[in-house]
Image (cartoon, rainbow, N blue to C red; front, top):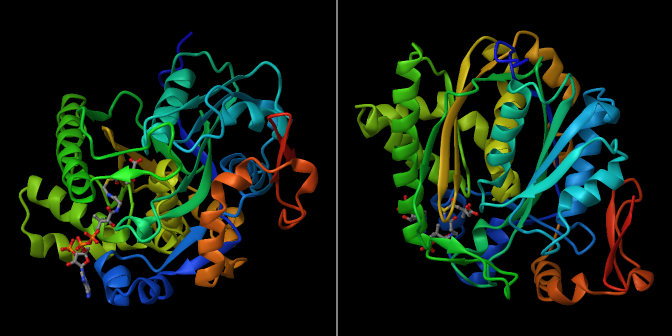
Length: 404
Ligand code: HMG
């Protein structure tokens, strides 16, 4: 039996971020750049910096555990785990397999990793929706986790747009936060060389200005497809009260909002006038963390719900996901009755409060030691952060070892 009439969507979410961050103003001074270029020009205040023990698996596990705890989720109810990441820890074994073990998930579970730059998490979310709509879920829930460490070369133009973190999403047929609209999405794809990471490199390679243009072109293509599909099924594409974008840095969300407004026939001034209401509440968490690649759109959604879930109940939110290379999707969801008090219980922003500012030399030492730290012997690790958090300890006979 297909469950097409069910309301399917995001039941709960939680974030995890590294313990340390760099103030962008400090980075600007160190790089001989006016701080206003990073803070106002790019719209980023802080970037999260992951230490070696805070790898994508550890971040994903922390976000998932937090989700289970704050949303009262029984791990035995999970039947599908998709991890979206573009900074995986192994060419073969997926982050999802480590997660399955660390979270104690049932053996009757499909687990895998999805990669398409920043789009991998959205690919997982759309698959989870289809899995439920097809009837395959049989009452179970899907866990979709976006986890990444965004790295560019030290001193490069991309450096101030780094970040790190994970967002865990629970997808169910009775969503407490956001009911999505299966089948009503707009896709766009094109083979472009805007951003990539060759197998032999830890830092991403990017043609920065081209990547911005590709992002905006993809927004136009995906929105156009979504608008057409919306009309075909009798929905009003203008029935949207807030818009969340993929946020590699805050300023691009502003450019995206202007671009979308122009496509919808509005002038820049009108786009700027609606920006503070429609977009700004979704940018607070991203401005504290930086780019989290696959999780970026969902960090923006978390920020929006944290700020306004109660007043948005019943309202529709537009969502734009972009992955370089490229693939993009526009879709929407309706904030559910009761989302306000439930979001308060989730305390989405709490992980941001418990962090430590890193001095520039500390940050640079972490970055320079990245490759070596990934291969350190697990037995010799003496810095693995707070005991209550999952930590990557190192390797033992090429096997990654974690403190659960
Ligand atoms: P840049 O070339 O150093 O910066 O790098 P710029 O010269 O373009 O300046 C940036 C902005 O700061 C400009 O504003 C300047 O005017 C302003 P805009 O004209 O764009 O509105 N500015 C100042 N403002 C105030 N005071 C000042 C000042 N000076 C200049 N003194 C770039 C910028 C984004 C290219 C670089 O950071 C980069 O390459 N970042 C990485 C790539 C990226 O994030 N691309 C985004 C689109 S692709 C994407 O989203 C996918 C991605 O997430 C990966 C994936 O899918 O996996 C990246």
